[in-house]
Amino acid sequence: MATPKAKSPLNGASETIESVVTASSDALKQGLDKAVKSYDNVAAFNKATLEALMQSASVTTKGIEALNAETLAFSKQSLEDAVAATKAALTSRSIQELVEVNSDFAKSAFDSYVGQFTKMGDMIVTLAKSAAEPLNGRTAALVDVIQSARVA
Image (cartoon, rainbow, N blue to C red; front, top):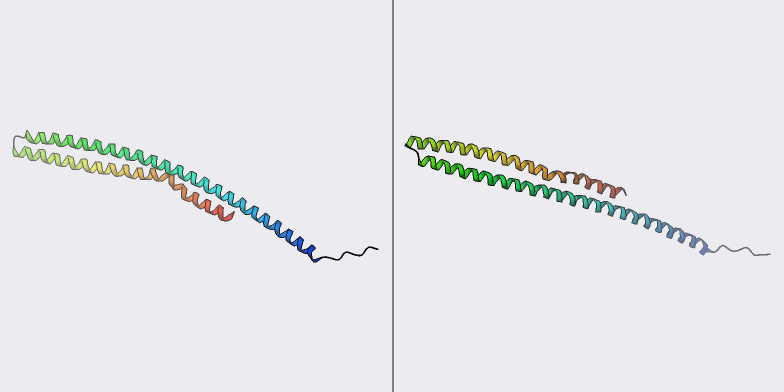
């Protein structure tokens, strides 16, 4: 007759150790999967942000070039107007005619400056809006990346 095997206390311990190792292994795998997914999300976000920055920089560069061209054209026109007014003042036949030429020049120069400042202001506002446009969506995208990292 065979004697019944005595239950060893090590049998229960080895099963417990196996279940702990299996659970730890599964948790580690899930953690690594979440980390890789989060890294991929952050990398994609950074790439899109870099592209938005490059697009914004390109728009800004073109806008500044347009502002410089406009400033140069206005300066050139202002100088030509001043030369023409000086010639007219030098050929004046009387003090009254000189005052009229000077007054006309001052009025037209003032109107021209006000118009130019308005135009430049509009150009700057348009440039600022255009340059900010590619970056506007990045804030919402950042919130999405953070939310997905927290949920994952």
